[in-house]
Image (cartoon, rainbow, N blue to C red; front, side, top):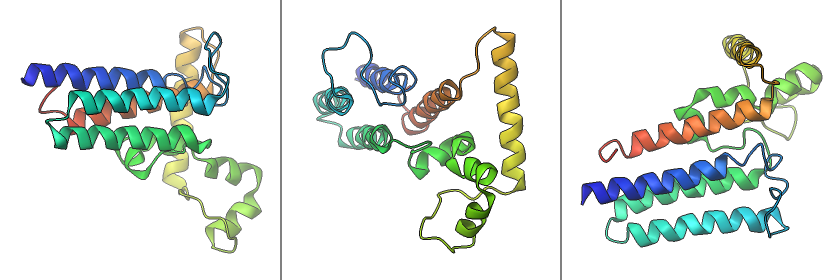
Length: 185
């Protein structure tokens, strides 16, 4: 029975991986990939996530705790896919992979609109950010993107922040599954 559970968990993981791997190809979930019949990206992504939910319910009907953990990850993925923001992930994902913080819009605000950012940080604006970087996080982010750019240069690839973000999403998914299902994997 454990082997069957492992295979089913891996199947769900692969399907969620495919959803997250569409991030760059779909222009951050804004357009349907070329060659697909659906014209609406919301419908397209919704159908993919609904298929995963169906598989979870079919495969884990007799295992409510596993089903609940998988459904939580699907719900969090759906939140991200529908958020249209970067990073747009739930806090739990950032806890599992703090490198997702490097993609927060707070960094862009700090650089492009420092006065507005300072007002937001001080609570003088009605808009609140999910992240207020300190000097340690700023330095870690700079080193992170330098490594990404150097790695792209070494592999003769054009740098893409969307691709780097997508790689972090995929890594986060792996971390979530390893944590939640270590007993089965």
